[in-house]
Image (cartoon, rainbow, N blue to C red; front, side, top):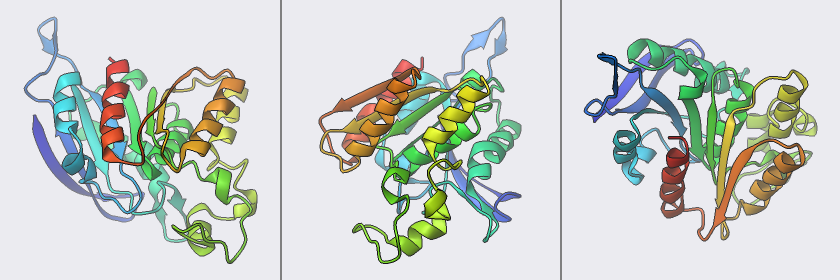
Length: 259
């Protein structure tokens, strides 16, 4: 197993960016005498986190070896992996498109959609769902843990709103005009509708949330929406809160199901 920290100049971000990477170099599968390209998982951190969170708080190095998958962990600041055109920081395009191409040039990765996955926890769970659907031609699988599907709760809020975590000004700066949030390309339900309308393939979706998690309601809501729309997916709900204990358990489950 190789652990790397990589920096490069991102065209989408217009500055140098850094990501962590884990590669299972000691356990590569061989086929007909040749080394098979690696599957890739782009794994996103949560709010107030960093690109080192998964390295420091989870068994992702062990899981990379066990499931023979390269894992790339970018930084997302607190921007929910969405494009910020005013600042010229295109977090969505960087996460869903550029980073995939850059890592494919750097490492021996499969270029097949079914071997290219995106996942994350909390803010990163939302980022995985949104960008996995937005760039569904790239990703064959989405792994979303305790996802912060907050478009359900912040749409149409007004100045003065605060939910104990952030307020109107922050959500307005990240998500744009909150009066038109639902139905936009920042709304996972709208993205599902668009993929269905164009007969485009929808990534295989794995979702999980703990029964003591403050985000349980919005995860249930998106799960029920997908059931209503007959979108095949896996939804796990079990004991646990918004904690690494729960995420470590369910990221292992998500990777086991992807074998």
